[in-house]
Length: 104
Image (tube, rainbow, N blue to C red):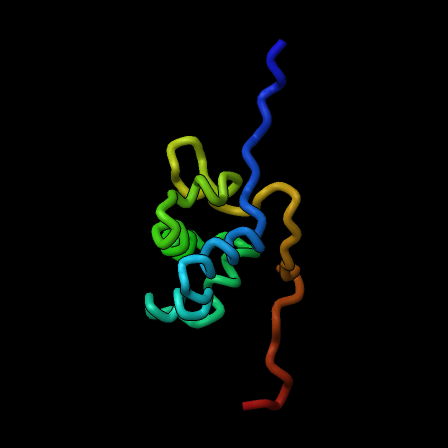
């Protein structure tokens, strides 16, 4: 009897870091080669950033949806909005930031 279909899981961040390092490049250097802040690749290990995901995937000879399947739809397009199960800080619309009275 075939097993139930399971959703593919994203690569573990440590696996991505190791794969990049095995090519002789650091995460920081990879980001900087593409004109990004040194922390850009580390950020995309935690939260979606399609532009940087594409850079990492190309460097590893993969497609972004192979590394982060939860972030892409069946056609390979990045998903928009929050992913299920992720916490995201939000501001209450009823309490926007306000300037102190008398400040100019």
